[in-house]
Length: 318
Image (cartoon, rainbow, N blue to C red; front, side, top):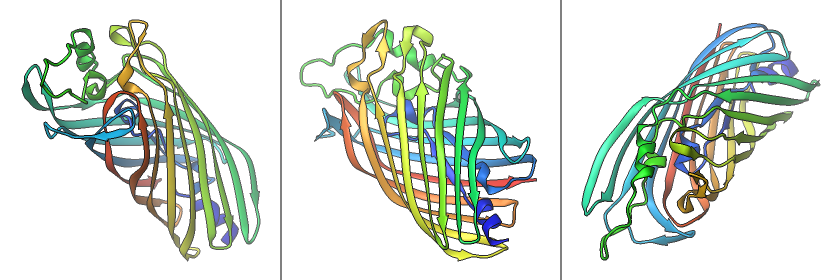
């Protein structure tokens, strides 16, 4: 029973939660199918809040004279179905809310944008598993598609951007940061792994987003997201688990393209570090709470970058 419940207790892997807002908008949460082997439906909610309040130019911190900021909240509705112990599918429906302050046209522009983002459909397959009394290993492959369901009205700003007048601060927040959708069909591939030995465990994942050209001839760059999360079970029983992990998450994203030309202020390489707590109860309930703090932020040109990121999720299997 103990080795089976270790499979049930593998909680959550986040795919696509990068420092750049372009990656932030297409973040995909997937409650790992390792939680259970029985067929059936599941439903949940995932919340990711990111505070952007630091300006960096070419990776170097610069003064934020206009007190620019961007607060981004992504609330995702998760609907999943497991066909058997190896194959599952999940639909992610995001609702995005962003508030911002930036210099624009010689004045201060403050406002909010909100609405449905780009819906994603992700399928998973457990390609290998090894279950022992004191140890467990799972290897999972995934693939999916992101649909152009989110509004791209803010991308229209890319068509009429102007350089600030001499002496005016430059904005680090643009249309590609505020848009709710990309207007493109994008593809997701990746792999996840879970390992346990007694009370020690770890999760890891590598996910790659393949972008196509969307509205207004804008193409977000392909994006690589990875994570390594070693941890320990503080409580491990037949009824449930309580785990604590050190989450190391990173991203490598190139420059977007607009009308065939590279957008200078869109590339980034980042690394986050922070605690992540997870809870499971029987085969039904799982939850997580995490905080991420940037330790590496190497961006191209002038961008507003995260100060911190908070994540939480609740998932229920019927």
